[in-house]
View 1 (tube, one colour):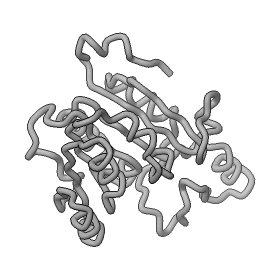
View 2 (view 1 turned 90 degrees about the vertical axis):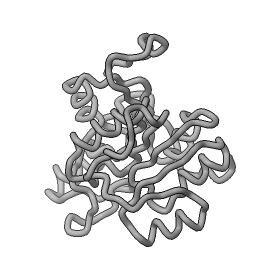
View 3 (view 1 turned 45 degrees about the vertical axis):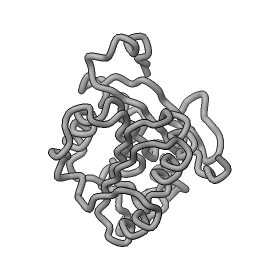
Length: 210
């Protein structure tokens, strides 16, 4: 789609199938969810805490619930969505373990997008300046950042392995281009598609390794 100017949006748009049931946790103003609803005819539900963002979602005709995703998803039965999206919102929640486990419970697959704190310029800022890094994907000062957790691509791989979470697809990118090698050093951002074991028979051969 012409409006898909952000690479993470394009990646997620390409992942989600036509007509899928999608839950977007921390959906913000609903831009991504709206694009999916218009272009992929998905059955969309968003969860957002900001009242201002919810008003913008409603203007787009989206179904959005005012809730803190840290409180869980008890209102949704197991596997009630084809995809649960956590794009640039996982690092802002207080209870990452709980939120991810809930997302994996209600979603057949979970799409996680986050900024890579081990990006080379972030490392150099710490090494040479001794200061918390500010990059294109981490543009905040230490005192006003919404991020509670700073993780790297390697950190998330380790987390998935430790918690027996299957990684089905990975996308590493730097602004507008994909990063084919040394992603933990070179990529600004990553998108993972994950799923809980045991996997459906048609996904058994799709599991990736770091």
